[in-house]
Every structure is written in structure tokens, then in C-alpha cells.
Image (cartoon, rainbow over all chains, first blue to last red; front, side):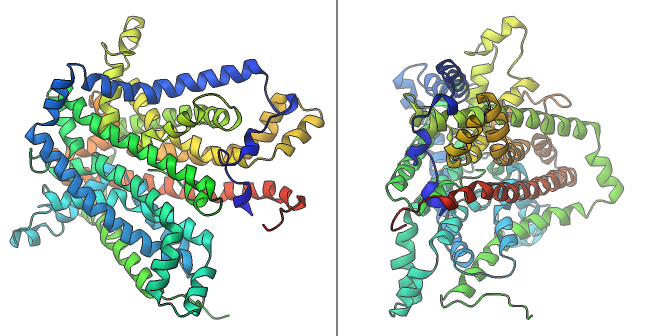
Length: 303
Length: 291
């Protein structure tokens, strides 16, 4: 069984002491570790430090003041709204897709899995463009929407739709391998003992996948709140109305308002750090319960 | 043999869950994507060809695909190294670095973009060191490569890590006892075992880099013909209300994405197959009681 031998940090044997024949000399070890530390320091730690250093460059008072701007608040509210719609929508979809694909064998299953991954392969700019082409004034449904005075592009619904598109696969691709790995026996036992379908789902399946679900939700949420390219195409950049937090950062930065730009950016950087923390905590937890989440933890594909 | 759409199962909810999945997939992804192809159909073939082979478009493909290939190669080399060090060596701060590798997935691209620009601009932390050497990092093609290296950093690490963790120590011991030097063991035994996973990670990093917009747009300087990436060209055309032109270029990008997606799927199947011989070594192993 692959679970038993899987994953490192979860598998102490991978770090077990090695003899001279199966390891490198101390000099090589130090050199390689040093190169990795410099590389990760340069590409990961430095940008993070830059965000906080620039945000606080003129002191805490200026930092706090830039966060209390009404336009910053409007952007934060819109970002929270978009995530509050996109994440639950993709959770419902992820659960349905995982149930259908993980619990049953049917024709065309692998094509369906590939199609679910499609939004990861598409450039964010193209993701935004497809909605402009569908709902924009020049678009396929544009004249019809205009006749009924409905606005999707350059308005909040477009932003929500673009956010749903780019975060579409996150929950599903965490849950599908997890549900597949767990098999059907527990559900079959519950059904045989007289539970209804929904009871089986809520009392048996859901508790088994709750950590994988949380894992998918936090990754989905991080992307939903941080999406830039797709939302930029559909938003129209109307200040205070269709600006999300990343778009607001762009406007401030292009106006050379560096401290406010980095102050707002620091909020998203904190969110990213929180996301990484929860993710590590879930992975650490899965080490305690060997089977199950590993499948999900190994699946973190393109984000 | 009769064709059966679905294997029998006593579990309920197949129709509901599959129906909803397909409905939602069509509504959010498939119908909007097909709108792109519908829109392109309003161009004749020669108009389409004229738009997608215009010099400015060709220059943007060269930059997007070239810089992505360089960035993905950097990610391949350093990703292998990072995965190796994180799996094999124990040092203080290892778990912290391991968690931090996913930062490019979690940090919004716009935030990464402005931070990298500030670091590499002529008066930035690194930019002012490179300036006297005559190296222009921000607002140049080098800047594009730097941003794309950041966004693609986790892919190779995360695809190679589980494979390295799964490798049996016995394989290396066997190589060593048969007289292989350490370098021979690494290059002839370990490298072939992790190569399919590394290539999968390379293709993922490349695919992500080709479509990347947020982190590049700040650092590149966006000069047409020189530092303009393809996604930016699409946005420029949209802002000039050239919907047909934007769509034609988007179709080229979509076709490239589909080709890359199929390549990645193929590589994953291949690396899955490559893993099995390793697994078969475990057959002779004593199975723990109760497992």
C-alpha cells in the first residue's frame, strides 16, 4: 500500500542516518544547503520583506492611515463579497464532482477530470476575456442583456464570475483523489444499516474528507482574494465600485503612491502567510492520521 | 459485449451529482470558452492569420514562450536541488523553508509583481547592486524572467519531493555495493527515477508562466516589440476596443494551453508508470502485522 511508504516529512525513514556510501560529504551537504537557502531567500523571503518594509517605510501612523482610506475599504468589501460567493459555489461543485467521480465508475470519467482542470491551464487574461466576449456589449449575449438593463461586465457580477472561473478546480481536485482513496465500504455499510443517502453523505463521507475540504477551501480562498488578471479584464476599474484589493494596489502603485500600495498589499501578504500556516497545520495533522489526507496533500497542482 | 455507461453501485446520488457537475462545468467553463471560438469565426481565415502573425504579436510570443522556457529551466534545476535538500538533509529551519516554497501559490500575483519591481528597480535592494555592472533587471526582459521564475518556483519542487521521499534506500545501497561512486549513483540511479516527475513540474511551470500576467506587468516595462508579453497584448487590444484582434490572439494562447495540458497529462501518466517498478521492490518486504 502506497500510503504506508508515502511522503517524507511524514516518513522519518527518508531522513534516517545514512552511511557514507548513500550520502554526500559534509562539504557538499553544506554547499547544496547554502545554495538552496540563498535561492529561496532571494526569491521568496526578500519579496515578502520588501512588502512589509515598504508598507512601514513612513511609520505606523501612515500605514494605518492608508488602510483607512474609503477606497481601500470599498475594495476590501468587494474582494470579501466576491470570495464569499465564489468559494461556496466551488465547494458545492467540488463536493458534487468528487462524489460522482470518486464513488462511481462511468464512461468518460478521465475526460471529465481533464475538463475540470481546464481553468488552471487558461491564462487569467483569457479567462476574463471569455466573459467579456459572452456578456460584454460587443458580446454574444450583450444586446440581450442591454435590452433588459442588466450589467455583468464592468460590474460586480462579472467580477464574481471571473473569480469563480479561476478558482473553479481547487476544491474538486483536492477532494477527488481523497474520496477515491477512501473507497465505498463505509458508505455501503451505512446504507445497509438503513441510513438515507444524505445521512450517509453528511455523517460518513463528510467527516472523512473534512481536512481535505478545508485544504481546498483555503487554497481556493487565497486565489479568489488575490486574483488579478481575470478580474482586471472584466472590472472596468471603476474606483470605489468595481475595484478589488489587487486592482486597487495596481492603481495606487501606478500613481506612485508606494506606501499606500504596499500597505494594502501587506494585507494580502498576511493572508498568504495565514494560508501557508493553515496548510502546513493540516499537513502536520495528516501526519498524525496516516491514511487519507496524503492523497490530497500530494495533489497540490498548478494553482 | 454490451456498452455500459456506468458500473452498478448501491450508492445513491449518481444522477444528481454528475448532472450538477456537468451543468456547472458547462455554465462556468465550456460555454464561455466556446464563445471565444464563436467570436473568432467572425474573422475570415486570412484576417485571422494577419492578426496572429503581425510583427508585434510574433515579438510577444517570442518573449512569452522564450522567457517562460528560461524561467521553467531555472525552476527545473533549482527545483531539483531544493527538493533534494528538503528531503535528504536535516538542518534548522527546514520545515519553515518547506512551507515557504508554496508562497508563490498563495501570494497574489499583483503583490509579488510590485514587490519584485521594487527590489530590482534601479534604486531597489538588488537593482542598485546590478546597476553599476550595467545589468538592467527591472523594466527589461531579465525582469520578465525573474517574475516568471518566482511564479513557477513551487511546481518542480512539489512534483519531485514525493518521488524522492518514496525512493528506497536499498536502491542506492545496491548501486554503492556494486561499486558505483556517489555521483554515478545520483546520475544513473536517482536521476532517471525522478526525471518524469521533474519534467511534469517543468511543463506545469512553463504552462503557468506562458499565461502569467499580474507579476510580470509591473516589472516588464511593457514596451511593444521588446518587453510586451502576449497576455498584455490581449489587454492592450481590448482597451482599444479591438475585440476581434484580442480574441484571435487569445485563441492562439488557448490552443497552446490545451496542447500543454495534454502534454502534462501524458507526462503524469508516464511518471505514474515509471513509479511502479520501484513499488514492486516492496513486494518482498515483510508486511507489518495488521496492515
